[in-house]
Amino acid sequence: LRTVMDKNNLDMVILTSMHNIAYYTGFIYCSFGRPYGCVVTKNKISTISANIDASQPWRRSHCDNVIYTDWKRDNFLRAIVSIIGRDDPPKNIGIENDHVTLDIREKIGSIFTFSVFSDVSKDLMKLIMIKSDEEIDIIKNGARVADLGGEEIVKNKGNFTDDLGHNFMICSQAFVKKSGSSFGTLVAFCLMNISKSLKGKKWKSFKVSTMIILNLFKNKQNGNTSGKKTY
Image 1: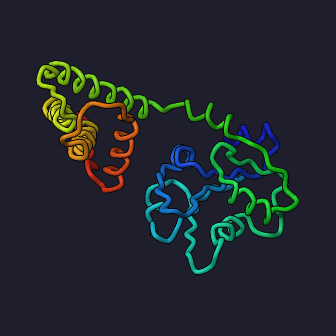
Image 2 (image 1 turned 90 degrees about the vertical axis):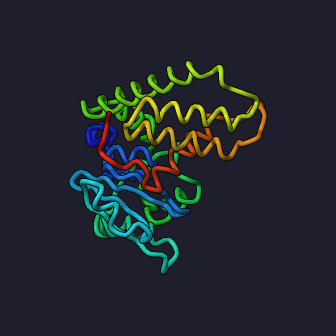
């Protein structure tokens, strides 16, 4: 990231997206309607989080953390200033144009009136493709678990009916049977939740992928399947 900063003559980068903050700090936020961020300069890196998360961002990341409260409007912006100070404001700032809201972009511009803003989202998207050996192992294991569950679902497709809830419960049971891993259990929970919401409903066009993603996120936030088992 700092190589990109040097290449583009950036004094600071303000990360706002969940994926980039997670990639560079290890902390995955849930916004609760509040802005989250990460300030990266040439010599420091710090996450910015809402008071509702308490010290979790600091515990779950490798860097510093600044917590802001709701006592005053726009304390998120004051947190940014507290990290870099007022004496030497950054001349060039990188932001994620594909994520930052118009409201936050306008407000950041109001406190750094003499700064030039540049979009770093495309550069960051390329960098996030670089994975460590540990990340690759997790991805491979996730694919392995998905294959096992998928094969078991195919074996049981003869039991499918017009009831979508019934069919998703079969899928959930398939993952429970074939994988005792944290990921497999998480997928099974998601499919079970979808099964409950679709009970009695017939086949029609709907966004299965969206429902699975939402249930994955919900189960993660609830703390389910947080153990360290991988197989």
